[in-house]
Image (cartoon, rainbow, N blue to C red; front, side, top):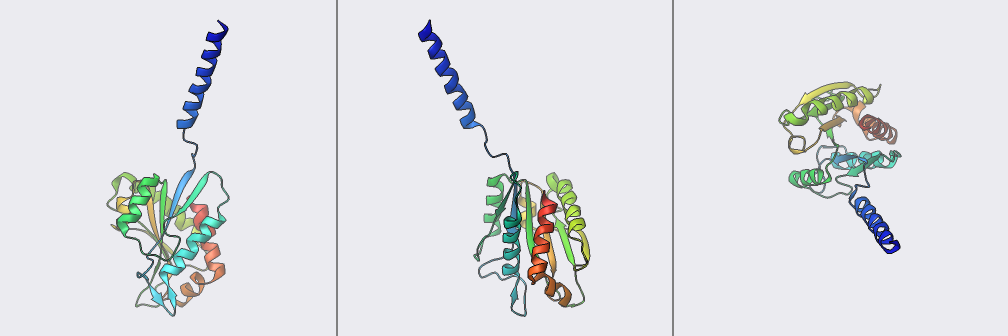
Length: 202
């Protein structure tokens, strides 16, 4: 009888071990930050400033600022290298991300155009509503005296269209506008943007 009890006890412990072994240990909210461009793809350039470098720097600041144990910030590109859009989407979907925020910088022939804008996909009906809600929160949180407030716009951008989660793309300002350029290339401006984006994705 004692032997049978011991065997049952061992089996119970083993059963618990198996259950725990297959239970997801990481229930964190996964936020993917996609720094646009990279490598030979410079993005917008002006006066020695490059879009790829600016958005990479801001993305790294977002990750560094995160102290919330329930949120995991994943940088899609954490170095200066080129990534195909299909490669980015594959990583996003394999991660089973909860949200994707793609960072970009704008430029225009009209130097008076300024401010930030947030885009959602008009080709991803499943996550359009959630993406729009997140885009509106980003607009509200990032709004400050240094950047003119834009609006939520729709576009069939590849990453947002093909990601299996809510996804937004932020144009952080215009390099071609002196006010925007001074802000998004400054340490203070980048720190503020990183903090505001992080606050918006929580």
